[in-house]
Image (cartoon, rainbow, N blue to C red):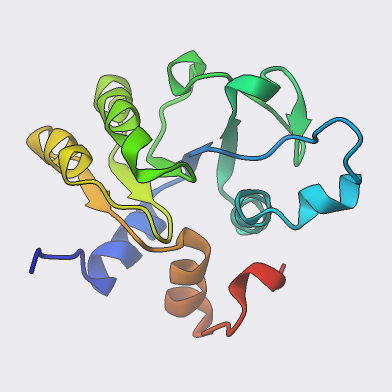
Length: 159
């Protein structure tokens, strides 16, 4: 069994991080009800983390230049000029090694893969550069557990 990062380390990360590049934030599809956008997991998590003082940069190459939750969408994390503490990924596991390499390139402190996302190659890439690797955990739920002492039953439905 691999060593998973512990609660104290997650608490330290969340306390000492100010900026998050969120890969996979959804943009509005043509003809889609704009209310649907508010229910997409990455968008819910983005808004939540913003509410708790984090600067969140949405990343979506298909929505570059659009504005989501008040922030301009970037096509790539390398386009952001601000230092990024956490690269938070809402994309399939097989896509994550590319994001891991970019997290190393931009000097991020953490590669965070959301629920259901894990990739051993990504883990090796970031850990070689002393970047923390968190997988299969929701940043919003971890924040709630640690700082608000909450355990939501249906986290996606809560905003």
